[in-house]
Image (cartoon, rainbow, N blue to C red; front, side):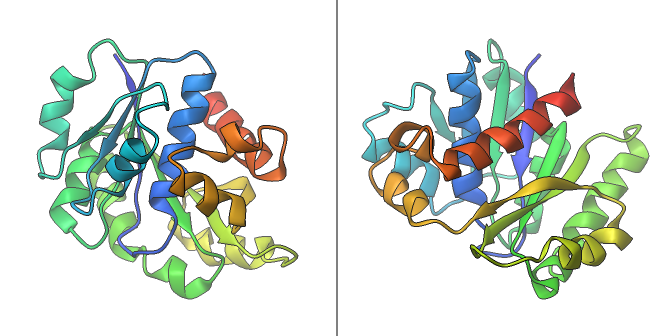
Length: 212
């Protein structure tokens, strides 16, 4: 059975699609069979895949109905990992993704206001955990951090009350992310030895350790 990771945040602009695509590509490059699910009706992940003519090496499918947990039963067959790019603001869609997940990653910009906007998602995950013996697990990821700022302590303080860990390291707001996405690629393809690619691989390492 595939491991399912959802990248969720009810707030727009948190970097969900960028993170989901890069995680899927990193998993694929690590010799895994990967399925990327685009649950946002805007279809940004699907647009990215089309821009690259499918050269990512893994399929991208759209599931923009609140039945993800049911449809994945058959769709996920034969895959090692499924990564779900979550929709913003659509509570039923987010709830469906939570039900389908083994792990929920919550990308947040390094601002207490952005973190507090996740209250409803945190409550949803915790309610699900109470009836499923702690599944899905969840963690925060600092996303779109500005280079040169030191906000790790402030973010850690802000998320402490949520009882979810914050993964080590940040995904910085780098131009290479946007450039690669426009071309239907990733930083792992365009600058595999660059700082942005290192950040993605460092994040993936922590995720893989959590599933070990």
